[in-house]
Image 1: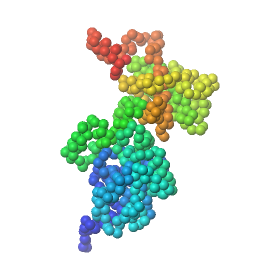
Image 2: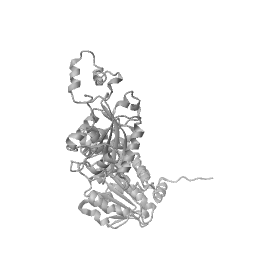
Image 3: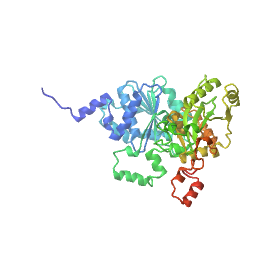
Length: 486
């Protein structure tokens, strides 16, 4: 049987008619392509938006525009909205290299026409184009969209107050999704930082740095580094490694957020096997809710190692949360963690004296209110010092509190925590601040009848390792306030 081999042109035409164009992309761009395709194909109602966190010159805009074309070719009457910071930038996609490169091999009967800021396809589908400058996006109001691409969202004006209220309702009847893409913004107060934060907390983000771009030669890579004045510059880290340089200045505990390995999150509860564990002072600390969540932390202070461990947390929210529900949850968790009758102290914020009184009088839980004066300048600084000195750890059952604290940021006013769709008012972080503030670091909890030498038992680990007579280093340990110095 005689077979004939299709020509390159015939294969190209067949793929165009199927709306399959990923072969046009570079290999590193196909990674983004497949991620966006995965997001668009998902039926999870919670995943109605996604972030492509991407380095400059990666080809993300090209890839997104190609996907928009594919969907318009595959579906009759489809609408894709493509928005950029400037209308001129979006129009450049049509007038510049992107349009010419993609449609270079397109059959003539499939090529769309450009009219009224839209690419109109022969099958009735279209790609609507807009910029955010001069409120150009308002021309989109009232229409429907199957997919919305917000390209370079980190540099859009009026993102939170103008763009999103205009475009998000466009997917209500279609079940469509919003794809954000950008390098991190330069501005410390840009709305996109909140978008990034929410998607990062929800796990709805994919990051692609310059190190993922395998198409770059060593010479090209070095040229980019030189243009940025080095790899350690803010510009290179933000634009090519996607680091939140601006965002980090608002982080409540940046020492946690900057470490990707999570060394402060314990893998197990091995600390319970320590012979003195039952003697350590235990703490239950609450940040009462109302408008916000009620967050409660359970932990202990290891007097020997001078370390605190948050053993578990409670995150209570909803209309059915009452003082009785909270009291029952606290008792249940306390009994689960500490079956023996150890020394437990109860602390809470001073915002809700009524619930505190009810806990004390009705439920016999002796919560003591803590003063929140000097929250930023003193209380939070103490937590930062403890993290820096590696004196604070989180058990597996306190992972929520750990992630909340790692994500916590200050509000733009700078004097209170911001709000998060995942972590509320970062209430678990507030409880952690009260926890550290009220730890008794000075009173020895070991009973004197337990035959422990209280003079030598609690020497700092550095002292025990010193050679005899090393007076200079001994003085340094006791008077230097930095890492590991107690």
